[in-house]
Amino acid sequence: MREWIVAALIALGLLVSLSGVVGILRMPDLYTRIQCSTKNITMGTLPALIALVVGMGASSTYGSRALLVAVLLLVMNPVASHALVRAAYKTGVPMWRGAVLDQVRPDTVAPRRASGAPGEPEEET
Image (cartoon, rainbow, N blue to C red; front, top):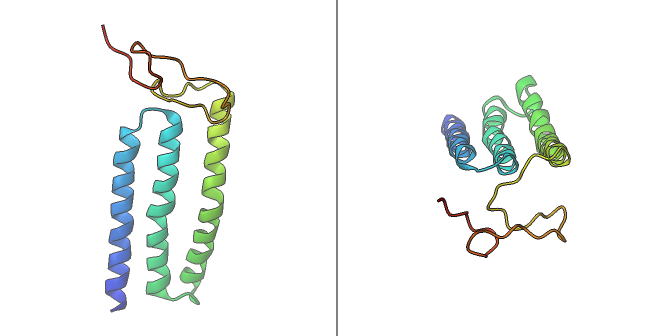
């Protein structure tokens, strides 16, 4: 029974990682790609670490290390991604043209497009 749970957790981690890679490839700019990769790394790795804990036991050397890595991953990955996005924003990396709102500076209005509505993609001529 334990082997089935481990196999299911590993399969879940692989599926989440695969869908995350597809999401990263489809995202339009750096900010959305970093957001997607953060979820991909966190939610794709956690099932594999939990599978290691279930397979080896929490009191084993590998199981206890996997628990430690899981906790550190849950804490450090979002913080590191936030710092990376903040540095990119401060250095002037442009947002996607279709972005409607800059949440860092809400008083800034997104530029109007050719149709006059904010956030719509520009028409190609």
